[in-house]
Length: 253
Image (cartoon, rainbow, N blue to C red; front, side, top):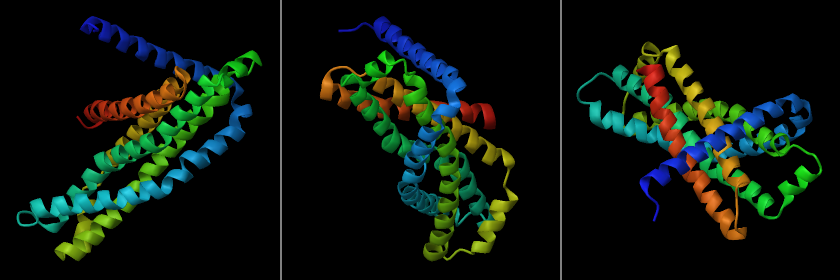
């Protein structure tokens, strides 16, 4: 049985190790040109490959936002304020958070499993023996792909969510789409879009580093790979929610 102090020390150890991995990965940027082909490959996997699931998730997120907002407020406020509520909910919270969670489940798990398999099969050790920087070869392309893809996927999620919200508001509640759009335009703020992009960038960095960290430190064969993948997804989602709160306070507080 571990005492609380031991849990706390272990927590700070892992945090420090993740920061160290981020530092080593950023240092490997000096070899950025050699990593470009792998970055393009990861962009296709992380960004393009995530479009279908992000689009499907976003359509239902927009529907839920419209149904809940209209159900709660239709009898009390005009349609333009309902449109404003839909825009604020989607842009500030739903689009960046749900996109990050979906990407963490799809891509983060894949990164942890792939690197974990390479670790237990000693492929990462072989790279080090051949004097190939594993941070440049394995972590850097995945991290940059996450940083680039997450904001773009978030913007796509916003567009699809708003479109589906307008459609469901019209079909189910017979609301005037023009009034909803005017409300969104009236209450639009650059800070909303800026905050969503900043959140997406931070979510991309945290998910990429967390997934790579647990993959790099996998032990125990196939069972260890399974544990590392599970931990990577769990910790990534926790970090998404933690940074969502922290950035929400800093940007909108």
